[in-house]
Length: 123
Image 1 (cartoon, one colour):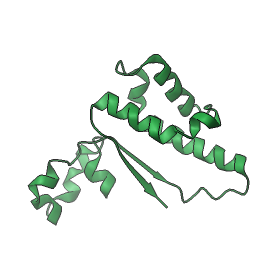
Image 2 (spheres, one colour):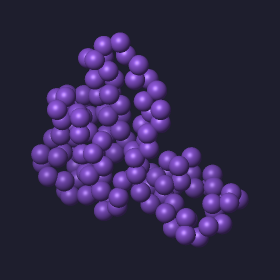
Image 3 (cartoon, helix red, strand yellow):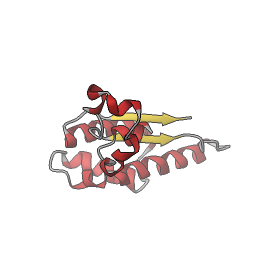
Image 4 (cartoon, helix red, strand yellow):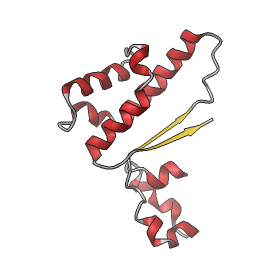
């Protein structure tokens, strides 16, 4: 539910909070649908080998980048940043770049949207 409340990509689902206590809080409502949100679940990160774990994480990061594909053409990002995003999207980023993927993606989102990024991690 946090994703649907904060995400700037879920404005059409704001009705989910109608009649709930949070909808009565004017200060909280100022934040509704205002932020880029990265939501990922790690429940499927149960591989037996390191390489398999890396492959799964690449897949997760690729899905996150795909949700914000507009970044690939963002004039607010440098060419090198867009290239890195493309590597993430194509699951081609080297491990040393993958380690910083969430940080990088949050920075790129902040640059593009001029708004802090919220990261939600499940399990």
